[in-house]
Length: 123
Image 1 (cartoon, rainbow, N blue to C red):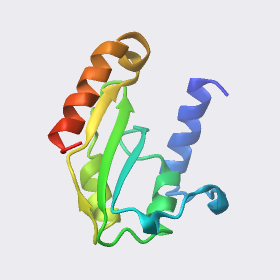
Image 2: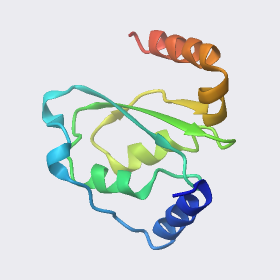
Image 3: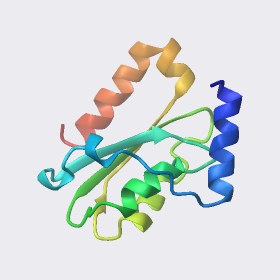
């Protein structure tokens, strides 16, 4: 599927507030983790709608959630705020946004940004 076709699907899902299904057997048991990094591309200024399916079908109470994203100009796009709203009993830590183009073309710079971000979080 092309990029434009994917963005069309993303926009349609967002417009209908869709909750796409996923294969739950393919997901690890999140109950064993205290800290969970949650990443996705920014689609139309929001999490992909399938992520809301994940947020709503899992108990993140007491967990530390750390959002990260790729984007092409919208930055973190409120991922942290939206994650806090979707998972109200979790602590959401400082997220990171990286341009998708930089991931492809400036890998050393992105690696340094990720390293600094992780160090700031204590990793």
